Image (cartoon, rainbow, N blue to C red):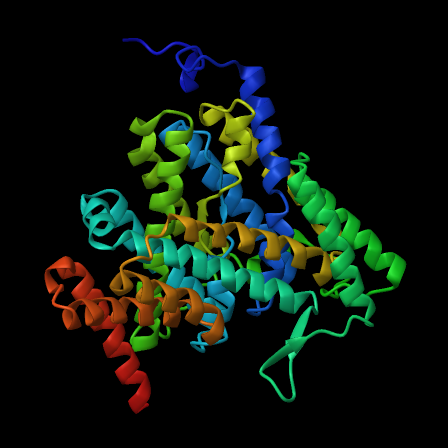
Length: 429
């Protein structure tokens, strides 16, 4: 049957160009905060802030275009929260990789992600990993994001008599964080369109009023400076075990996070037949992210805003992508954004991810404890990879100890063995 409504089959989907473009614009204003937030997180890994901004914009633009033309789905692909924290705090600060080597990890993980997405491996892996462990990864990432947000906002700090203690509420930065959080949570609960964008604007204005210095100090930006970031991939650590453990961990997070997100999005618009191509678009976009100089793109949760606004085809994601490209004009002003304007967003997004705990069946203790260890150890060790590893090792151990060895799939035994080997190698170095 011939498709009706042009390349995006608008008539077949019961939608119009105006509706799709409006949905794309709403999606953009819902997720545009990621430009500043992602760049600030990546800058802590050593990537020049303005370069990270440009990388975020271009990765989002290309990701949305790939989703539009390959899958014809209204799913937005932008650098993901959680995995950007993994890039900075696990790959660079914990594993000791340079940001250039970490980008190489992203590229190789993207290749593996594509191999999985374009073959039957996606189904095999999806069925091999228990639902409790998949959900635990999301919850653990949420805990990690919330922890980072609390720390960035000064609400918690390193203690003298304790590892962590509450921040000094006499400091202007902490007061600004609290006030910005109250405004942000109010806008979020009231479902105000572009709530995070308004939140950043309020927090930045508050910073000027309080005389708080922005976290990034820079005078100007020239597009030529992006050459310091684009394609700056280093494979110098490719022969080292920590490099491949990082590749394995990033691939795991990418695959399982996006399996759930893409399924959820395609089901939301009653288009489950688009899952396969949307997942493939997701994988290709994640692969290109490393070349642009950013952590991987994911099928963002905020896609739901565009879908709720009536987005049904790739024209929605195309519109969002084009608007992202237009954001290049605002790069010089993004460095004015202080940490306390970003912290509430990290806290709220982390809280939303933690809500996935309600999907976990914790009545079986052999399922519950590995999941709980993933959730606890990701923020406690400040390492997403280590947190996942501990849970994935504990799962088959508990099943074996209780005579339930057959409940563990062969791939999961292999994954657990690889994680255990990594801990052993680290212990002897």
